[in-house]
Image (tube, rainbow over all chains, first blue to last red; front, side, top):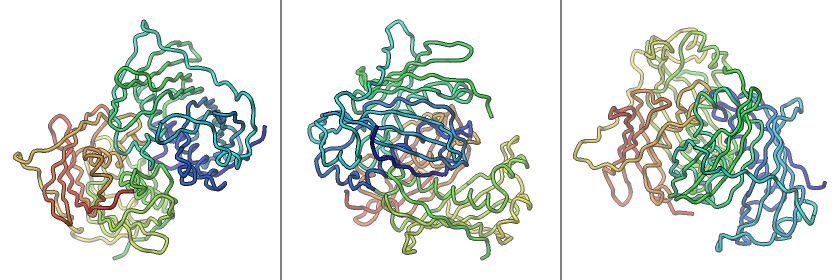
Length: 253
Length: 253
């Protein structure tokens, strides 16, 4: 597979981490997106250039495999490449490695171009896509769908009113906050003693300022070696985002 | 005044900013604290060393003067020095400058050492203080007290349950979140068209996981050139934090 690869280093500082001394998932998402933004700037198709076409890139799904979460104080290498695209979808891979080159996190994702006026996705625009050198394909990799939470699965939930500082410079909810709502609903004792090994998240609709997000979670499987959780986020009863997560136990610090 | 000065550079990236394309106050607070943490590490008295004494540094007040908020994409220089101390209080100054050396933000602050077991402040410990080279003085600079909100001043309020990711590696609420609660209670239209010029914040008690923070604000003065707001944060009716802020109008992007 083709696609120009972009890499940059980042020193993990105290506010990148949580109580486990690991980098938090919301912050790692920020950093992955940063790598793709920096690649776009380098290739001359940064946010400003893209917005001239009246469109913006929007992620529709991430599938992450997490081998290990890096500890605060370490320097990590963020890499990304747009690997393939068809008429509507772009496939972008991310990876995070430690300084010795060991893979900590691998992610695949789908992006679309959304029209700023109509708020609908449209055909990809060659001028905004060609610089990445990704392969034109008929079908991009089909990422697995997130299973639905059924009515008989009792969920635990919390509500999150969207805050002013959840919005990025473009007025969209910064992607990392979806992960905060997704994870914060779990008990602190659980989050302190478990880390995700696999995370699949599908975005259906755009959460906006003024919305009150209801984040729900249910444990669907618990064995000695693995725990799975299913998640959904709704606004006024309508599903905006769904996710599934697998977890492993870690020793608390 | 003595005190070893420490400086480092930081590139402001997309997640450091808000809708105005300026770095957000909560993120600038993160960065100021980062500079002081990096200085402490360099001097051999980082968090790990400090915790060996069963104590931790806690800020009791910040007074900031903001000349301008830097735009996203710029590289800023963060500087800090511990300028003076007496038996109980340490005075630390921070400054943020642009690449041409123009001052954007100046802050003074007071820190104390809190005992991890008793959760009370104690005498400063020479081994943890001497490396900074700050002056021993009888009285440190007295920072102005924040005026109380009176009962007849009708406030606007929002509630903020403390979230798991609000906690830093030490299990304390990361300082920047106080600024998020402080500012988010204001209308988005106001935050998009105003930036703070002066911010005085006093911490009375430690907000913890499980707390529901009520953030209140009242406009106390509004002229053509200046607006002032008074703030308080309470948990179960008890005051945990008070602040006052002056604002100027900026043109929206």
